[in-house]
Length: 128
Image (tube, rainbow, N blue to C red; front, top):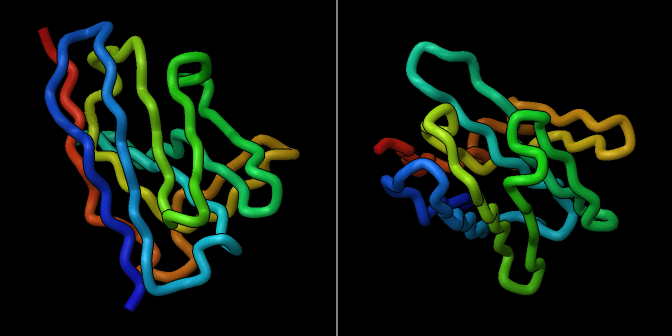
């Protein structure tokens, strides 16, 4: 059974930090790129960051570049998103998913390869 389980969300003030984790199981994690996708109420889904399976190369959306860092540990089947200098506009539900991640062209997908390659999400709220 494929599972991706996020944790680490919460409520912090602007300028604060959070560290999101995604623990995967039930599939060949090391062969899949993993991405973080966020969705805020009334807004379209946005691809935030992804990390490739082949060489660990990364992609970041312009809106988070320089503030967020993605990493993966294949042995632990975990992907982490370190989020610093958080802004109110970062408020959203953050999902991890197995998605296309083209770090050469700097593009990522926001639809998983299959429906179950998508986590339930963790809420991030940035507010003073």
